[in-house]
Image (cartoon, rainbow, N blue to C red):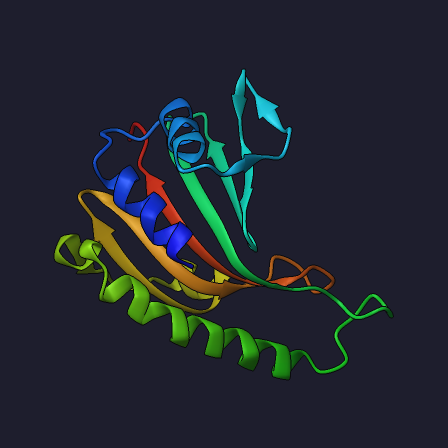
Length: 160
């Protein structure tokens, strides 16, 4: 998961992060584009077993996300033991958190309060601020028939 740490270290120095600057970082770090451009900017990337995405919002906010672990549904279209999958994701997250907290980023991270909205979105998570941005690492499942993922998300706020 060194790929994610390297990207976060590079993105930390870009103010503000925009879709184009994030895409340039992905390219410079030799991530492979997945052919999903939006407004002329590649938004989906892959390196090793990690997937990365860039999302922009009308407010000007930019979200750079990394899926560091993905567990898809079983052949039935469901999870036979969803609690076991959540537990596995929690362990992957627990194993990955020290990589963030012991990286050169650590000196820039300030632990942030987990909100009720965060708890609604993530199964387990840890959240920091990084030079005015939000960095979240957590286990997430967007819908019951979608994969369970361990995500790392850097959010650049937009206009208030």
